[in-house]
Length: 190
Image 1 (cartoon, rainbow, N blue to C red):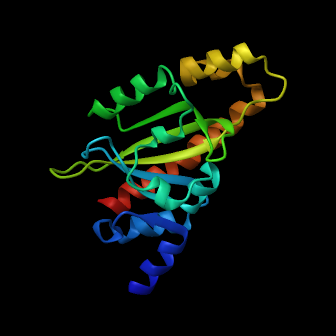
Image 2: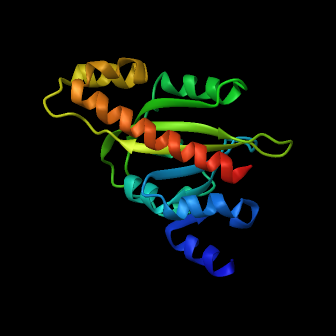
């Protein structure tokens, strides 16, 4: 068990892996999907785990990520109206999963569009964890800047302005990946 935990720490980074179920630690270790875990019961909902795929996506190091809210990924001026939707989601007990389209910026300053799936894991007296699955959807070629800006401000509800028919298949695949990870994480958390 100790050796498995040590191996997980090489590809996933945790504030304190001993406080998490070993199955959840293994999920972070093995997943090729960008994953984060935040503690919604703590002030400012800090990240308590991130895997190597997330670090690759964002360009940040583990020590720059763990203990911080994901807002550090947002460009100067924030992410617009999507932040209010995210806050509402975190307060709603009857909604377990949601997706958000968020403007983000890598550590080296490159702007990108991040499709984030959030899933609530368990709820006990001490802790509510939020699993984040992130997918870089980029800035489509040939798209007029005003369409891009509107999509960012109005979030995923305007994603159809950016997508052709084949991109919807990609989005369905990403949602399936994120849903699979949230189901596995819930099983391993509980």
